[in-house]
Length: 213
Image (spheres, rainbow, N blue to C red):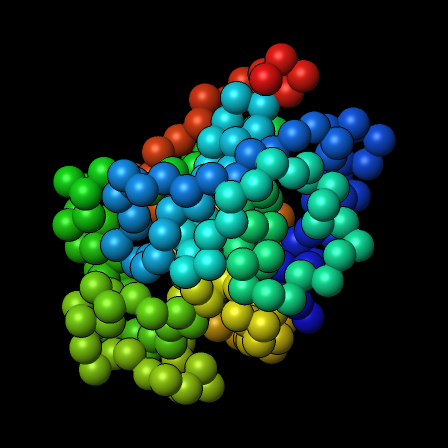
């Protein structure tokens, strides 16, 4: 299973006949953003209907597009997969399906790391995607083999990896799977998976009119 494509398909069904899928989405890069400590790359933003959400990636895209650009399209290059995730993030924030849309301030990093390492303590952990801060903190608890892990962590980089959906499908219900950071907020919500981002910037839960933006 391709987790990004599957999430796009589910979003398409959710937005069916709403008209929102044809409203413009602006993709840009925020050079001043402070990324989540579990993510590495450039901060690509997606703006839609008065909301802005982000996805951190090595292949950011600047463009004006529509949500519907993703529907029925092969999502193969990393940049296209990242753009799809950014649009999922802002769409789910717009419809109040997710609250986290941007990374927390750097001042919250220590508290977040402390709480997450406490949550993981005593468990073998496999990370999909590079998470240097967490790997350094967990030390010998980190394993490169998902079969040896009690908990599987997925960050932005891991989310767009082609094999991630198969790993999630193989271990769902057998191991705890946690999606980390603001970049994974939309997909984890659509997939109904556990998400960790306790200090991320939240969107107000009211739906503005996308036609007014």
